[in-house]
Image (cartoon, rainbow, N blue to C red; front, side):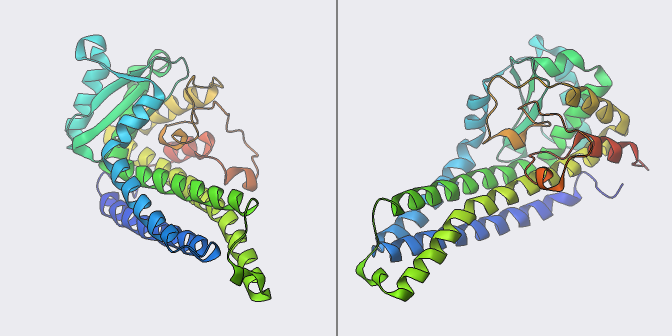
Amino acid sequence: MAANLYTNQDSNVRKTWGLMVVFFIVVMFIGWFASYYYDNPGILFFAVTFSVLMNVFSYWFSDKIVLSISGAKEISRSQAPELYNVVENLSITAGLPVPKIYIINDPAPNAFATGRNKDHAVVAFTTGILQILNKTELEGVVAHELSHIGNRDILLQTIVVVLVGFVTLLSDFFVRSTFFGGGSDRDNGKAGMIFAVIGIILMILSPIIATLLQLAISRKREFLADASGALLTRYPEGLASALEKISASSVKMKKANHATAHLFISDPYGKKKNKGISFFHKIFLTHPPAEERIQALRGSKIN
């Protein structure tokens, strides 16, 4: 198995900064075009300033936002001693600080990790997943989530969520406003009209492209966390069996949210990943099909 617990850390840090640069360029383009269209340079300044503030805010408070949206509550060791022991033991094995543990009162089997870094990380599990998994399967899921922390996926995913969301909102605002008001006088010319049409097309496409990038990154992260998690437990079958049970459930989480869906180990909307799924449908999934993940785990070799 090529993946391990540490090789993806530096890569994810580079990708995080790379994505931030790409999205800031997109935000600057949208802000620049909007400022040109409305002949108001202040729009560009506002767009860039607001994106920076959004990014800083998300870095410090993203975990609290996600936990609040999901309805997760922190628990003590006495409330879930077996879960605490599993998380603690695997954290020590992985060389990670023990993250805070949260429980979501929800029958849908699921789990996620969040936080800005390994020292401020959180793992959350639904009551549903704790009920259906045995200890070996639970270890597989915990190892998967700890791998997201060890690989620094949680920071990467947080940055993607915030920047994609901001680009989408900014684009939507401009596109809507275009239909209720025109640009400056210089847009009356033929060249100005062509420029406006091209700009509006790009404004409409930018959130779609951003979302596809978000989903593709999420799917790749799941495969890497599966591989790293299997390496951590030295028993890929534990996670494979857990994924079988989780994917067999079609129960939608009570507080399922599109903004945080990709953070979970499985789709919180309870959509089954059936075989024969089309390529077009697959690219819009927040998670790779469970069958592919299970096949990869059972075909892996732990040295």
